[in-house]
Image (cartoon, rainbow, N blue to C red):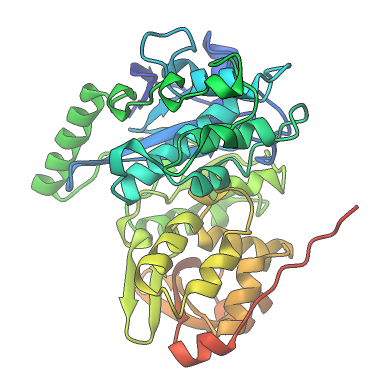
Length: 426
């Protein structure tokens, strides 16, 4: 089936797509949308940030998250809606949004990083709207500051950018804001002079895409089968068993282990630039790999659960026992990488490539266990030690797929276990 997604509300349908093409490459080379920039190409600078939206037909809800378009593969956006800086409008619009405040308060001299900064801030606003009830349009400025952590700016020293975040806050005072174009003198400053942000003016999830998703879901419910995008080099797996069968098939015929790549958020490409894969198996749409379940003795979750979702779940369900883990996970990568990158993918990098994973280290200390599918009807449970060493009986099977992770969170043990992160400083 053709790749179908929305770009700033416009329908994009592609029948022949290079599976290794990123969203950024598509924007820069195949559209007239040049606001999204290529900076580091590793998901570290934020110049490429866009917002991707997913519609859940079962709950009639939309989830908007910021992602790095330099890492996101085009095929992973099937049935998603993408908003770039052009989709938010300009500072001259009658209903100005984030760009108006950014341009008026930060007064960035170069503007290279500004589109990504705006999209990071916009993603932070949408995240707060999804998670909490925003009282009178007043947002938590600290959370907005965290949303731009993955966006670098070499020009302003960040003070004006932090002021932009403060301007959305519930407790901001005009004296907290620096120089801007909305008042000539600080003594004349009034909050009502700042551009008004109304979520009602934000881009809506396209109706045509909603109807397409609803129709496909109805077809699945009636027939029990799923018609997903399937390319000779890009295949969307519909179940763990399907993914395992695909993995085994391609690994059996392959002359090199690099031919096939399992994909969720593709954030590993920011660390390991191995673009020589000929087959991509997308497991991001497998329902059982997104299950998150609170148990009396801990939390069990699917390998495709994003780092950001795990943090949210720990905050909501394990405020005492899981607070230390959630706090540490917030130091992993940037918000945009955590929104897209899966916990399972991070652990796989630690196992296969020796990646210095904070998550693997923390899970090792907490005594996490993992489930791996080693045959169509058999799963193996491993400790973190066995998993990282590649043992525990899995070596007896040519193929394996990480499916579930269990993290024990007994309150008294969690309270006694603390983690720290050391970073090199120049």
